[in-house]
Amino acid sequence: MSIMSLEWSGIQQFPPSTQNVLHELLRQLKEKNVTTLTILVMGKGGVGKSSTVNSILGERVASVSAFQSEVRNPIIVSRTRLGFTLNIIDTPGIVEGGYVNEQALETIKRFLLGKTIDILLYVDRLDAYRVDNLDRQVIKAITDTFGKGIWQRGLIVLTHAQLSPPDCLNYDEFFAKRSEALLKYVRLGAGIKKKEFQEHVIPVVLVENSGRCKTNDNGEKVLPNGTVWIVNLMQVITEVLLKGGKSIEVDQKLIEGPNPNNRGKFFIPLILAFQYFFVVKRIQKAIQNDIASESKPLWELRDMGLADGKF
Figure 1 (cartoon, rainbow, N blue to C red):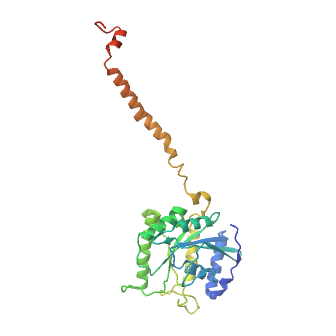
Figure 2 (cartoon, helix red, strand yellow):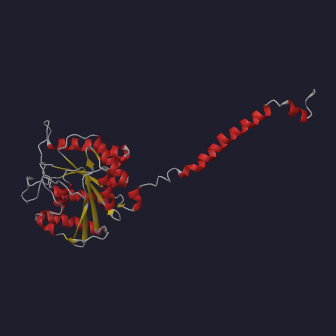
Figure 3 (tube, helix red, strand yellow):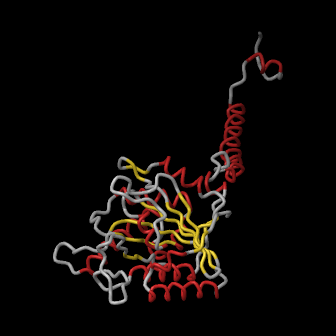
């Protein structure tokens, strides 16, 4: 992956306590011989993907405004710190007009050719109260593109987390219900079996990118439940990375998918054998039986010396 990498100067914008945690996480990764981390950020449009990228890096690398909520084309930002390289890939929303935008998805796939994806951040909003079939379609599109294994390196990121829950729920109860509903559709859309899903739980992390996010005494951004969210997000990413699973190598075969001309070729000899023994042989036998039982014409019986009478 040939990318221009700059020094991660944005990390110095964080409070000292946050910087200390981030440096410790980098040290842990390097101890495991992990010196490069590539994060792919995906989801529907207007959910806060670009803002989350900016928050993680501590600098404005993706343009975000009231009129353009996200990037129109994929971009990759690379930063180095203490011998460690962090790459983050921001992508356009993959939904348009209530359907998965195949053109946007194709653009993302082509952009990722030759790259390795270590972590997937699937971004949605905490305050999106409904989960419907469109969510399932988006999850399925991502799974069809990168394979079911991408979710072993996946996190759900819920933005707009600075909210007051409805229906008299407390914050943690609302978060749990929202997470449960979305994870159900992730499991269905990705085609993950229930047992497999229980053995490998996909973590859900809260994010608040706006300036109205509260801070603690150390100046760190905290959620209504007191979580220092930038630190928590990076800790969970590190845990998922070190837990196992495989990084996704995006090659031509992955982009193009299985060759439809090769589909089912393995079964062709079996089908031909079945046709021969159970169809052709039966037809041959039926013809032979018909021939054997067919009445001979008199002229044929005469030639065989079996006919009586004159001709």
